Length: 177
Image 1: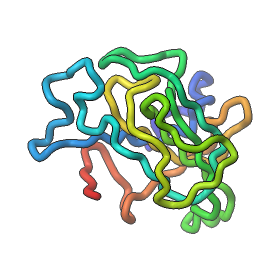
Image 2: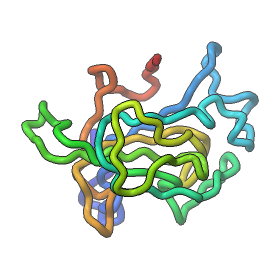
Image 3: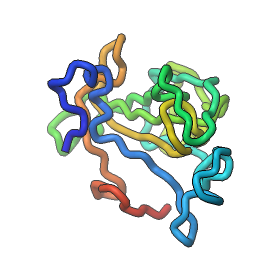
Image 4: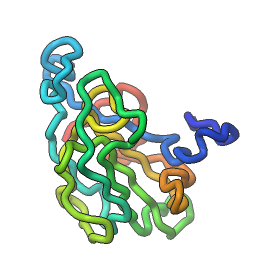
């Protein structure tokens, strides 16, 4: 199901986000944080966790240096916060395509991103650390895949579903690594 209606003009710039996933880390009791909605991002289990490249490719956008927000405040001016766009080739065998796919990862910890626009990365390379920058009401890693967007709206590409270990995730699915 596409969450962002393509007929609504205000959604056009973020159309690629339609199949986006927000990833949190839970402890053995199923809790995301130490306490009930703590304001300090560091109290969340996922905060500061390393983020690794899910595919090999080229960093086409790297934005870093924006502050983490205290929970539950958000930065409406910088929706993706500290983020990157990783352009990967040949990731659509099931879609009959051999073109580029952009993987967007967002809400990184300030000054944690490794690499600059134009850099090549390989699967498993460290990209940065999970934070709480941008339009994030608690620390998490946002990920979505899309066909490349336009130069003026890089997250406006056609959305693509993502599989983790061969399966499509739905709300509240658990993944172990």
